Length: 209
Length: 209
DNA sequence: TTCCGATGTGGACGATGCTTAGATAGCACC
DNA sequence: GGTGCTATCTAAGCATCGTCCACATCGGAA
Image (cartoon, rainbow over all chains, first blue to last red; front, side, top):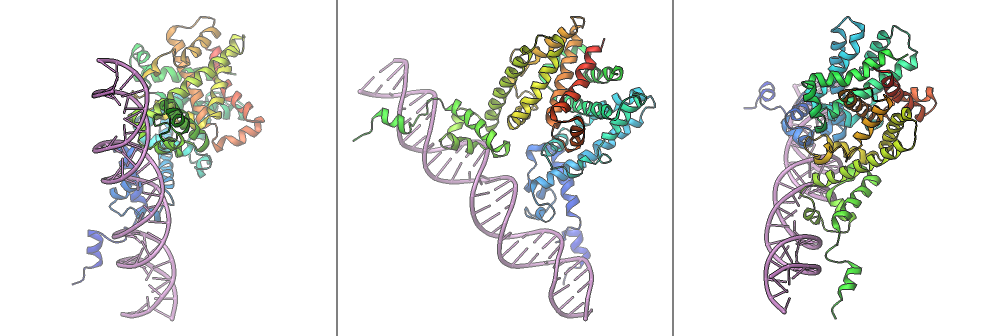
């Protein structure tokens, strides 16, 4: 009485079908649940219900798995920024809205955010990260260019966009520092604090030139 | 024929004398040589010429060792910033000088810088990091306050200082991103690029309010 | 001098990243 | 419909890692 293919597939097929995607989902599940510390290759394989060696047929390294996770994260970040950019018609308000969305993304998915940048920091580790369509960089440049009414040179737009990106990244990573707590209270909450710091970037920039 | 104490001490004393310091130096040596990836507790013990269990009499954890390394790094960062602040009498030039020194420190010691912030990101992991005398935060606030001629409110000075810190940190971490390369060439080098991005923070800020 | 606490060693345990050899299954081809 | 070929998965094993344990050694106070 040999088991049919269908029954095997329902129970536990020897071949998973789409392990690569399953591994990525497992990795992100672990990341949200236990943080980057608990994210071992073996744990990912366990989560996906597969042997510890199976992932090596889909990713060369643990690094390559992390890299794929990071790319997914950047894609979702870009999506969140795009939604924020479309949320307002006021061109002056667009850049701060993007900035706030950025920081809130990092706050909502801190573990994913950490993996994203621990990948991105390694030079040449993020192949399509210089593709402007893939990340949200062009969104920022458009918002800056628009808010300046097209008066800025291309180089200045680029510099301003990089500056903005650096600023929100720094804010995203240092948001939780203890030395900021008293100031947060004085301003009446996290949101006001974020807007206050972001204002020192974006208000100032819109008056520049 | 028992060996004398002096001979033993010269050869390989059972008790090291100042292992804690030796471990920290070994850790930093490994960090500079192999980066954060090669920094295992066992490697640190090896480098110090001691058994793998010895560090546990001086640090509760590997994390606690990393934490001490991070604190040392922040201390040296503060020192570098202080030197930069004293390098000029022009009050308007002080803040950009500090910013440049910050980024150059991160560039000169990337592994140490990474450890510093991977410690600092963990809330409550950096006990004396909210001590303004220990980090360089007060330096930044002074420079900002001075450049504004004492016109800014205390809260604004704090916000501006945080903004500057976030910006410089972001720049330090993203300095090497591939998508910035073409812009660097257009501006004629790394230094010009850094000054250009920093200018979008500091020039703008000095006109703010 | 004696003895205790601080500091070191050696060995062990479980977990991890990764490799190799072999089992299994989908799929083109005859 | 059988027959291989290749991609995929498992089992077992290696070196390393963080951590703990029992024990060795030393320095200094009683």
